[in-house]
Length: 117
Image 1 (cartoon, one colour):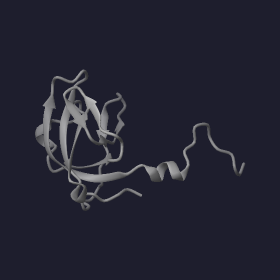
Image 2 (image 1 turned 90 degrees about the horizontal axis):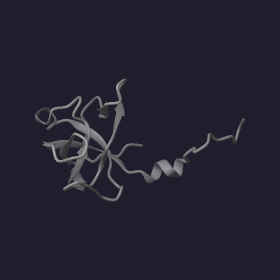
Image 3 (image 1 turned 120 degrees about the vertical axis):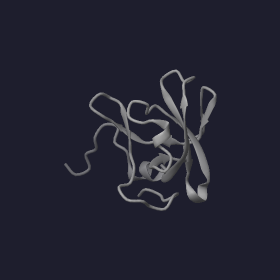
Image 4 (image 1 turned 90 degrees about the vertical axis):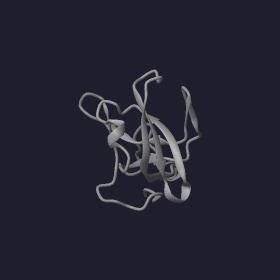
């Protein structure tokens, strides 16, 4: 079976092109104007500076509890306009049993801006 690849398989080069970094949420606000319930996030990526995002994470998170939490995000996608918010990064999460997003984060504090390998 050596050399067989799954349909749609990604290469290591595909993975290496993604720039996934850790950052700390500095500010979070409800985003009631969004089509789907969302929270506006400001995330400090250390040497990369602060970036904004909009995340559909209202089922598990309250904006008041998010500042100080580290998260992983793709930082090299083009910015995307989501309503009135220009989302500069894609915050990463996984669906729970109901399909609601649970944020991905390191289990110990790490320096902001660190790249995932």
